[in-house]
Length: 144
Image 1 (cartoon, rainbow, N blue to C red):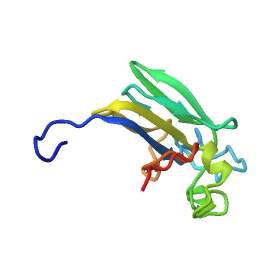
Image 2: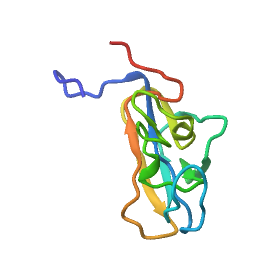
Image 3: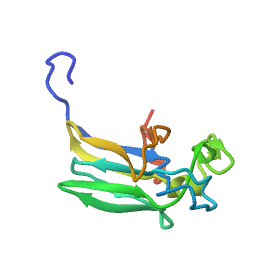
């Protein structure tokens, strides 16, 4: 909001990255992206946007009503967190595997957006996704 008028401000070009979209239907889906932990993570975005995924993405795009969804394909636990683990990479280097578990969202002429998160197939309160304020896949960093 504009601090002087209280009116919405239009952002002409907004990139941000949702990391760590992982999980599996049960605990029996081992892979080299992380420990199997039950609960498929799904990101839902209901505002007009485009998405950038890697060529080796482990995230499936879909739809739910008027929203786009991004659902995990592979397991993962805290062992693949971006920037802090051997699988996810150590700051400032984000690993290719961490990028494969991420979706970069690009919004144009945006005043507001709607986004949601849920865990499919199991009741697991220990699932997380992380959001970063710039485009990690395209390395679209805001000017200083």
